[in-house]
Image (cartoon, rainbow, N blue to C red; front, side, top):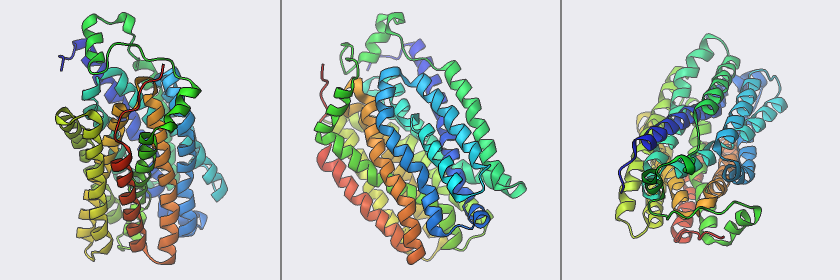
Length: 422
């Protein structure tokens, strides 16, 4: 691999710092509802089933917006699209602190999902813009690490705030953080401009994929992605990965309080541990994915194997997490699951950059994310109603079964890159 030119390295570092910052705030906002779950249910008089619907409202709009957002990221670039998304989602998050009825709360969460939709397709585009093909696993792991880090920080930061004030202020403060981040992102981030780059810098970025400029993205080229089995394998595969992850992301504090009978302080601390492990999982997976890919027959094969292995591990440790009596063992198993869930997610996003043609990396990433967040939308609803009818045990086992089937989708369908169409 060519040495990294100094100016490129500086731009890479800045881009990753900004993606982690916006990603942490993105997931702080998503997790606020889960942390304040019990207080909101009591204040608004919601059942477990209704809370499941509220927890899922974000995911439906987020998933549906992935399809147009991916094409927009490829067409107009990540700077302005993510900047606009930050403003929209931050205002929606702050509005969540003002609502007093179930219906208005659902609406606020729907708008939150619309605003947050550009985050990860934009991040995939940023990595493909600033990193060569075989070096994208590590930066993908870095920006994906923001997801579990944000969720881990949420109970540690927001629980004391809720106890000192009310659940409303948790929404106000996280919304304000997002508006500040929007200004920082738009002010500091820039896409590479090839006309202003040296031959050394261009050769570094083009390594492994040739120097031919990618053709412009069109609706026809976006639609053509659905002709390939790899697209469907990634859509179906990410469904189960995000489904099982979102069972824990949306219900873990409530699960620890309801099923494991922990008090709020204990549940807040215990809920942060698995997601700190997830933070490590994303970082380790990105680095390991690059190492495996260098020795694999192809970048697609190497990154696919990492995804499948991580997902099968999620399945294996969810089963004892559901069945053991010890709270300590349960949290330990859940920590391993979240470690592997974030490893799987990081590898899935780096797989996008290996499978997709250069002109449609944001588009394919968004299609995969669309499938994932259909799973993310279904997870809190199905979990809430299963827990209400029986308990959380069959809810967790259902998630394990869905994740297994999705791992098989990655394994059997994602076998070759999608060609560029001129």
